[in-house]
Length: 145
Image (cartoon, rainbow, N blue to C red; front, side):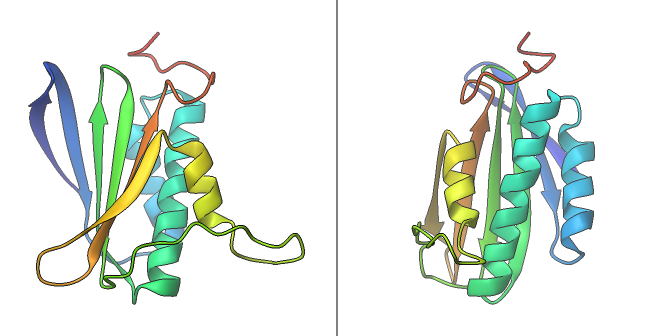
């Protein structure tokens, strides 16, 4: 993991980067350590979104690339960015009730204030999501309380 600092709208931000490789469990643990100072619900929402984006990248885009988190204090938000090898945009689908799969992006959509994708120079795309304390009335984060 690498870190850096930037300033966005006058509020400090943290950039955290996880290079490709490892398991979903390792990625969730990395997220927990990276954003563990947030409220428990906010941290869990970020873990779920990261898990779903990584799973989609492996299942539909030839594997995941670099995972980035940007944490902003005011308002309390986490921006998730994941690079993959496919130029195809993710598609939000309505899974049939009997389907065993196909609900990942529905969960990302519900947990995120916003999400989408953008092309990357060279090849592939970056899928992103913003998970904000303001999205739900969950336990407030320490910095937002």
